[in-house]
Length: 260
Image 1 (cartoon, rainbow, N blue to C red):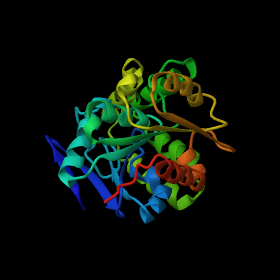
Image 2: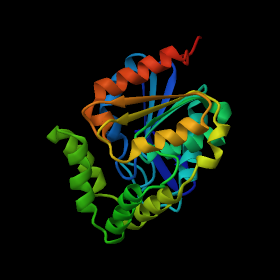
Image 3: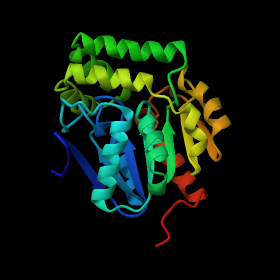
Image 4: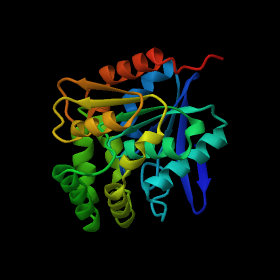
């Protein structure tokens, strides 16, 4: 299995397909299983999935738990693989890593896709969700994470079990720091620095995240917003066909595909 070694930690990754590279970032502890249904995009694109700290097959304990740390880890992987500028795609809190990568490495960023994401935690409901995650991690309730997260994301028992298996192996103190630093992350005052095209995808039934589209729309130079019917937060797993079609159409419309 391929691993990226960085300081004291190692990070599992997978590469599928050929063409324009898309690098995916998952939420805390959920790992690359989050994007199980996005693998279909490998028909037309090169997909890069990485298990970040305390997720999947990667190192569980690490001091590298901030959004900036994750962006730097991704940069190391892009360099290791010798990739052309990539499209970064982040789901939920993974959207923060996608934003930070674009801000830190504009020369390596072709476009940004944010699914159910936000530039900062600036609402009562979202802060409450983060604080619940912090509380659960602090109390080492990994079994709760391993039950709730797979259940709300997948209908398939097999997919639920795959994700739950890795979540149960997580390190609670590390997960607590990831949630704390994710809660404190802010990109709002820097969004104008992102000049590449940005795609925002939200579920119409999501009571929290779509509100942030107004901030993105105000600050970004080139942004498209798409709302997906019949789903709340979990667009990649609950509406995968629509999600994949939106991504594919946007890349083609923005002419972001490689020309060589």
